[in-house]
Image (cartoon, rainbow, N blue to C red; front, side, top):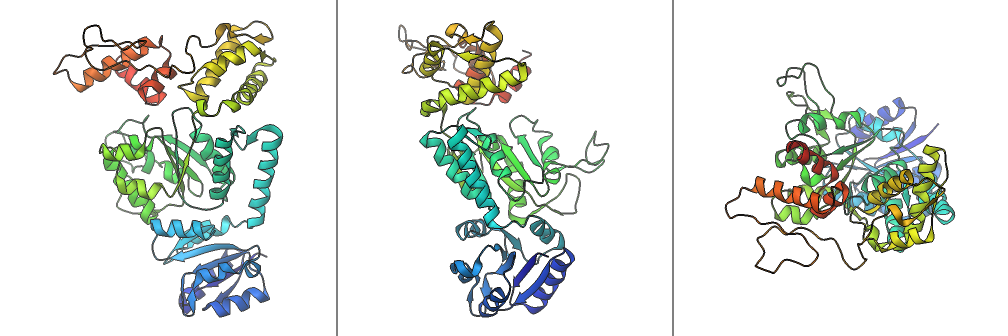
Length: 461
């Protein structure tokens, strides 16, 4: 039977928690001071320590300084508020999670259901590093460049904790794959992983989709609907393109993160939520804050543990490995084997990849389809974009006579044109400039592919 030690100076609270722990199949012991906690741990090593920070003879964190005493025990902090400081403190001291007092039965059940000895997680990380040396893969990610090894180190460090992760990087760099790897290495792996693109849901529906709604709460709400937070209970919720979320909804998201409770649309009854949030953005979140599109307090709350993904052009050593990986996956689906020639690999190495790894995958898929033999040559690969050229973006201003930017298309905008009309003109001109290649167009415009598709749909295209 698993054993829990409750370190809490409030006798009544400790007794109540011991009863809840026993109801979950754990044996339980209590301690009201650091001295008593050390004595209990010397007698029986606990599987999990529920640790209050404020104790009569010192700070509860003093227990964590004694590695021999802690052994292989998992530590859960108990605190009065789920603040940003609590998350950072839990991460700093290596705590697996934290409980907000007064502790509810449901909250405690979720914690105890995820109890896993730290050594188990450490063994899994070592296994992934062995796989990396052997195959070039780390979880869902591929690459052995120094930039990617730094990402792997960060993922391995944060996965076993409960803190919020903020992944940034250009479109197509693999932010969702980072989130999935964090989930698979975490104590929440047995629960759902759900991904939602905040820029791809209608502003009229996004609140209902994320938080759910009650029957009759608005026209068309014919039944109760569980949102992403409820469906991901106990697991991980990946909020992609978080900077595209409407400002009024950002306030509600911040409240959920701070209080651990939510309310469906049309409801007045708060519900506890037990979800780890991994957020992502392909634009600079600080810039979005300065533009008034993203709340600064929400950024601080999400950005507890930032991970930045490098663009493909900054990790050229990974290109051959990624090509082999994608061709292997395509070959398994298609039931055939193909490889790229050296000339084709050289062509790929000269390209700037504005759409990053996602564009590489799509380029190889197209080349595979267009190639009849076993070797993929450079015939169907991107051309005439030298490594030093960068990405040409159409100008959004009337050029001076004879002063058009070399190598870049230009458009002319009349003063007084509405912003919506300018946006449409720029999008369509960029799409035409890139030969209707949508991924390159989205990358050049700095928007997601889904956002581009939504705009084209609005234009009837």
